[in-house]
Length: 428
Image (cartoon, rainbow, N blue to C red; front, side, top):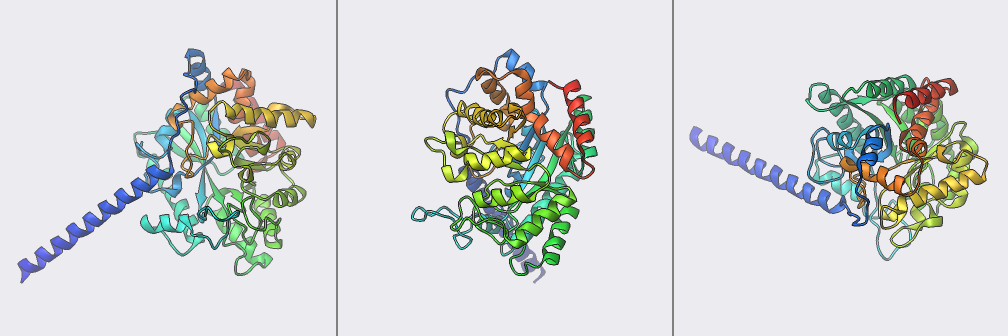
């Protein structure tokens, strides 16, 4: 009887291991299919000057969805777009890790996305063993993954993942990178607070949930994603309304706590409402612009000139993406989008190169045209487009750091000036 029990136990263990292995293979196959790399055969090959300039930069990227996938953030993977080792190899100094919790499937017979459409994020959570029924649960699960990686990185042989929660920690990261320390900063962003205000939109309940996110380390808050939700309308939603009363409360409380407001995916009405409400500059973390949206680029996903003007007038920045739906096919389109933003800023009497940033959307179920470990291709592309060294430095990091140093907890105009001075002194 004992022998039979042992045999049965061993058989169950083998079946469990086989099931786990099959699940891992399925997740990897989905990951490979959704997060492709679209190599541009006309992308420039970086020369020695490109490589030297690139290594002298402080690079900050406003958006990557690495936490969405069942890969170890600290391991160099041979699929997907990004992880800490690949980002570090590409000289990324500060990476914003966003959390996707609900993502409707784009049905070909519909012209808009709805919360009732099939949910890719829930399906992916199911096959990865994550919370299936709760958008909130999926957000907090991904935050736990980030903090686990932070703690483990202190004991690993690779670069240390350093959390940035306030303006002083940002400055400390910049100084550590300037000393040549093997560190990379990380920040948490929420891409859509879909559950906030869903069942109880009262101000106290909404404010309490924002505080919980803040206490868990969230520092960049995007109220919406690809569909209209209880906080705001989406640029791809069916009604595309503006901020709801709950949405206004959420943004006010988030901003008061020192969170950076991100209006990527927001409807034009939402951006207009937010621009009239917010007291500090805001960001659009990963986008393109409709005015130069051609070929495979999707206009609804990108900024109209009216919305772009609202970002500029707030003193904010736009993170330009690397994937075709945002900028069109070919890496040469990336500086074209940046130039349009700079021209628009110049026409409004603003310093042109202070409002553009990087927003890769790595691991965002898109085909990127720049690899995380070969970001010097982007530097080479900007140099070939005629961008000056100082403009490249502004776009790749200074603009984001200046805005964060002003808007994060402990931030101020004086802290922003000090942060920029250190960047200019120690980096390109």
